[in-house]
Length: 100
Image (cartoon, rainbow, N blue to C red; front, top):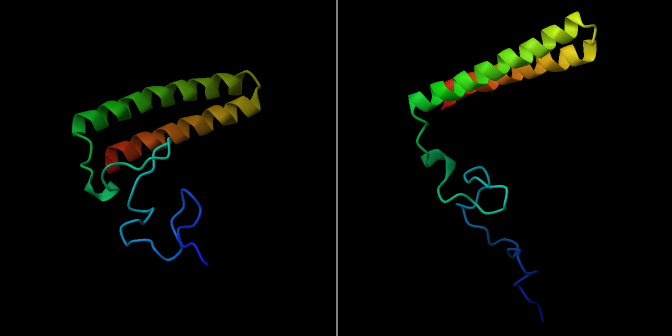
């Protein structure tokens, strides 16, 4: 006799619905899914976008300062890591403005 319930915590094979796509829902660190799909979220207000981009800009300046000080101090590895941190922070700040 076959038990089609499967293991506890798992869905039986072949019984997934069309709205259970992982690309449409957000999974939070605790494992629970967000209450609404990602497409239905409203973008952040412009004032919030500008504020977050300003914070990213300040952090990018600090990373650049670490990179410059390390370069002139002869610490090549730390200079490269500071420069990478600066570029990544600028990138995320720009994405915050563009995508919201």
